[in-house]
Image (cartoon, rainbow, N blue to C red; front, side, top):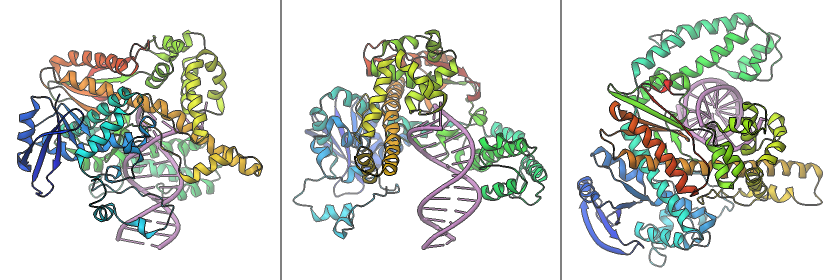
Length: 566
DNA sequence: AGAGGTCGCGCC
DNA sequence: AGGGCGCGACCTCT
């Protein structure tokens, strides 16, 4: 399978170089193409199914998509560099040992991450570009994509278990392609349905701004209940003062605290807060800003979360509230095929730890019910809270009380997350199944972690330090499970994408939410798409965990609108 | 006026 | 409760 590096011409700004390379990164033939001709050149070569290598998918792929060109596979140097830089599997590589450079920078145009500087040395404050210019002749050219590809290949080849990293890098890169494609295709969004929904909930929208009618009526109710006709409900401070002035004993303006009140203000205030949020987060202004031509096009950020989960920027794509999902509607003659992985994180934990008892509970389509059927706990709710407590690190309450039972029933699974927590408490890194590694604690936190186990310190200081250590331990505990679940989901989506390309009518991914995918599909092939989603889940399990006995159960629905799923 | 912090709440 | 996020609104500081 050929590899082709796409890079800027070193001298000519409107020329792109297509550099073929061997499997280990040695240069072969090279072609210079004018930038405007890139889509045609890529399309012409795509038949040979090359892996396209480029510095940043978000930079090169959108123009290709705009020109109607799709590629099957790529290698995203920036995303892969980030993985290899930190992975314990490649920590001795030249790549990981080298000083941070352009491949550790956010892409140009993004807000630069603020690094806390330990030294106020002006010599170290120079820009990367200036530093680069100063060392032009003697240092290896850090910015050359071909050189970087070779460093990455060398790092992987020198790793203990290169197969895992190869899978991770391929999945990460395919994820970057999918993110660009989903933004290009957009999530089908019916603004008329959205508008009706807003009007039904919030009342009519005033022409000149201001609160919609139903929201205004609720505000009046709240003010009356508190006998404060001028109270500003949108100010937390004013609202808290207002409630206290009315004789209410409240700690904050949180939903939780207000729910506990036995007072006529509680009900309208809770309703007001719910609707005010709907208006500000996903109201008419949101719709006008984010929906164009019947499509919502958020900016997905692969690996935007340290664990490897995606983030999104703009529009809050990964926080679409259930209350407006009815506006996500398939085009006429099309369907939405919506699938989510049931209890993904516990299943991932069972597979990682090789805990066959927990895998047996996962034979049940509802793993939590499987835990109940095995006699570990009495109710599904208990099973759920106990399991989430193990993964998140519950220390108090009902969830913590259930931990001994869970530990007895699933010693290997609980042992794995406990070990991850202990490692974090000692300041050590932890890794996902495929080798993504947690960030090191910053200097201040590392000092706390050391102090936590120090002797002779003041008891109060030790207590505070141990508290900090446990907090970091909860992070590393969750990192291994959340991060591995993200890897499973990436493999699932990549396997699905490949299957979708073989189905007629161009069904395509339009949404991804951690453990959930949505495909916009022509109605006649919707069942075929549903089967492809199931097959892809099986493939993802095999890719990561071989012949592990763990099932990755899915809930799949073919619907007209998103609110009909689940 | 704009930047940055905190709160509160939506999602997994 | 406990992990991971983004975002809008308010509020304070500059």
